[in-house]
Length: 119
Picture 1: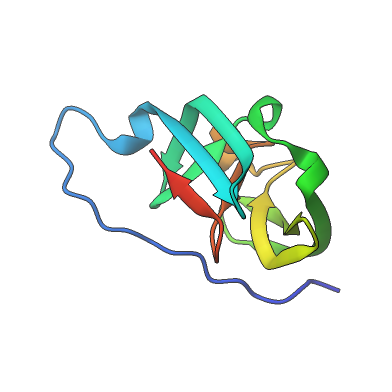
Picture 2: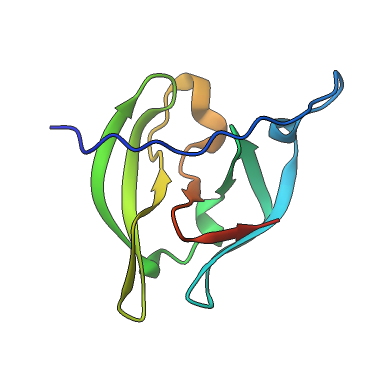
């Protein structure tokens, strides 16, 4: 049975004809409770969310809790973010086996809902 439907933020951005945020990698950090959860020079922006390569994510702070089938990305796996006993429910998600249209972010993690992401 699929997990709860999670709505992630979508940010509209002004994009010129030559490049978009989705064509570039970004330096980014995700932190909660003053603890770095992810830090990367190769984060990818997709629909307003920064996705971190799996090798740049401290997965010891994540506990998978649910899955949801999504139309073009595949099955999203949601995780609580847990640091020093404090929890951000569904604070992270990733696509371990992304659909063909989302292969660029397969295995990558994104954060929200109380996890501070800066770039």
